[in-house]
Length: 267
Length: 344
Image (cartoon, rainbow over all chains, first blue to last red; front, top):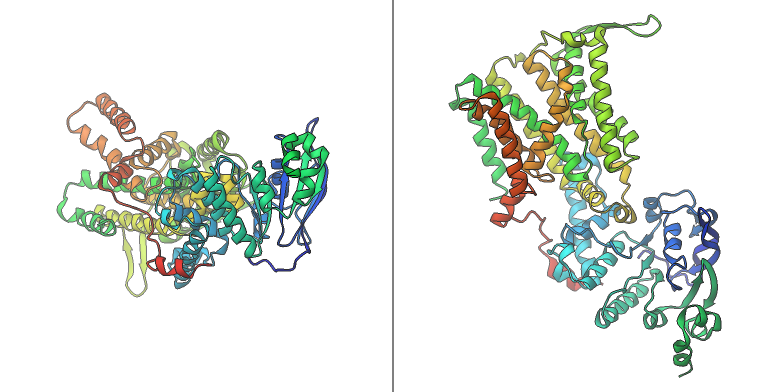
């Protein structure tokens, strides 16, 4: 959220990334760029390598070949928490929240990077500890309000409705102060109302200048929010471009969208 | 009520030596108190970071030996004929060096063993404790081996201008142990209610997610290990200077198990858990002794433990909190509504 509104500057660049698990090629020679302030979606059939790509970008997985750069910094030898401290923050497909603590505490955990107190401040209860904690609490309230789950703040995260848990997952990521968010299937399992609410949130985030890379199967949503779409199949990029072009691309239709999409695109 | 409770407990326990004149029971209070400190330190690792250290007694024993040796002095020959002679130092200095040295051991063990998790971590910590026990048993020149370190001086406290105060009587030892419990409690409480504690809970709950919000997992695990080891070392030091004799049996696996039982039954991940669990399992043998034969005592001990784990699987303290509906969550900033209005 401290993103500079410098449009069309490449934020994230994936250069010749390949991932092999033994003999299995999960990703072969992947190249694409996400520009500052853009919303880019990564789509493709299950097993196409989308989540693997996420894991590589965020340092959870070392690529066999290639390099990922974020704002000019190579992420090759960084641990996941170091990638996060560059402002590149992800969410997870399934386990997206800390189940057994309250919603508010979840966001407080997410705000870890923003804390200013040192160990001595904590142990000796120095004034800086109090200041830092109250700043964090204020910020946590703001983030919960931004995401729209402030009414749930005292509930246990594990007891939230599914859609709210996904929103909390995003709140957690936002708490880590991202300039770029990577969302892994954020609306999977959500109903239509929840999805609509989520799309509004994405619009708000875009307004704040956050760059977004999205992996998602919900096509109406992907088509609705994306500036550009990258299509993966068998670990290979088969198409890239604005939603309209992707909907009409014959190879994408064959591999993923199906003939129905072609008809809808014509209508 | 919840805020007052630790103060009430403190006042009650501070009054014990005033009305209790039975030296046997006072002794039970002191040894139980020492084990409570050790259990509290274990709880920091087990309850807050979720890592089960089954070698925790190693830190307890290292603290005991370090503190005893610093205050007794030693003269050992290292490899290559190089001699190390140490003159006796004041006991309070032995205590501090004991705490710092076990903290250092915690750092080394943490750095090495937190590459693995779960069962592997448990095995690494058990092995560590066993290695330390064998060293204490076989490095006779330093530790007297099975002959035990004897005539360990009691704790002394140097007060500038007032001379030294000896913790020789049971009463004074009781207050010493109570004092260390209070200090450990405050340290652990401040840690777990801070950003550090949140990081620990996060990595216990879901390590990948914790990492993804920028928490350096190894750093916080090692920090927990250092603090935990240091506090266990303090307990060991108190033990050595109270009993005035220690042998390699301080590294017995049974002691680790006792600490684990205290933490689990009391309620892991709660501040009061190890204290409640420690009091119960410290006093069961004392109470049972008054009416039961030795074999029956241990059967009762086991039965009581099984009963608690079955009926209150979360532990006693969480069960009580749930019963009374006490909420441990920090309060949301009072200006919530106003802040929501301002939020973007």
